[in-house]
Image (cartoon, rainbow, N blue to C red):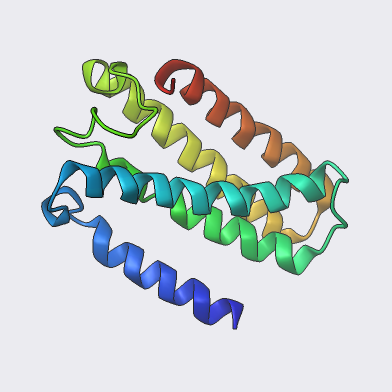
Length: 149
């Protein structure tokens, strides 16, 4: 059942992501899309982070599934930072658009760290997962500090 849900989410997200901005009727739709993709990514990452911190019992299968979803979702929100999406219900700072190169660099680094977490989770080695969780968390914080209000 979880795999079916993942496949449905992944299929829908892939359909919507390329080229994403062309598919948004209004800037508010793009904002909702990117917030939703980040929410799903964060929820799955949080499961793995909770296990690595000992707050949740470690389950290698759930960790691997959650890390895989988080890594996939990490690819999706960036296309929804298009023109006109800097206003409205968003925590995005104006610097996203004025320093797009830096923002894109941070996004790529986070995706890379999320992919490393995905690889570590597939091994089932909790120590490797812990190290990867720390790197993902650091990359998220760096970007949030610079580009999120």
